[in-house]
Amino acid sequence: MIRVVIVDDQDLIRVGLRTILDAEDGIEVTGEAENGLAAARVAVAARADVVLMDVEMPGGNGIAGVRSVILERPSARVIMLTTFDLDDYVADSLRAGASGFLLKTTPRTEMVEAIRRVHRGELMFAPTVTRRLVETFVTAPSSRSAERTLRDLTERERDVFLELATGASNAEIAARLHLGEATVKTHVTRILAKLGVHDRIQAVVHAYESGVVSPSRDRI
Image (cartoon, rainbow, N blue to C red; front, side):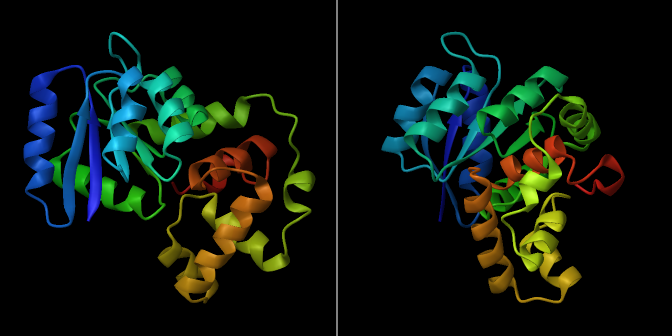
């Protein structure tokens, strides 16, 4: 069962999302919060696996909410859910530790699939923000270098990292590299540890900032 917490200042939004998600097999809404300040407390109490976080809320916005959830409930994955797809929101959300960014206009089936994918450790972004997301981190100045990023990875881990950096799932990586999914999962775990990053999305950001991959390889 995937435990979901909804963070939004509007009652109607929370009720609507709860109604949609509670009707899905394997998903249960276990908590709600009205702002980012309460998000971490509710996520911990509700043992959240996935948090749907609005960006703009009075009394504590979603960016601060992501940081607090990641700090207090590290196993939780956060999807930003908003009516806006502005660049600053996307970049700030990712830097805070979010694993996805969806618009509130996202169809029901896609939102449910996003929750399942993010819970599996994958990434999920609205198509309209993907290209700008990549460009934001490609053009951002960074002290990282491709050589420094790759030097501690084995040859096979480098192969997996390059695929991971395109947003590929474990199943997709396994198919492309002719490996078992369990083997890919082990490689991904080791890569995250060696890079010192929280999750896959942070690894993607790391890859683009360091120049390990370029927009021409983008398949997020």
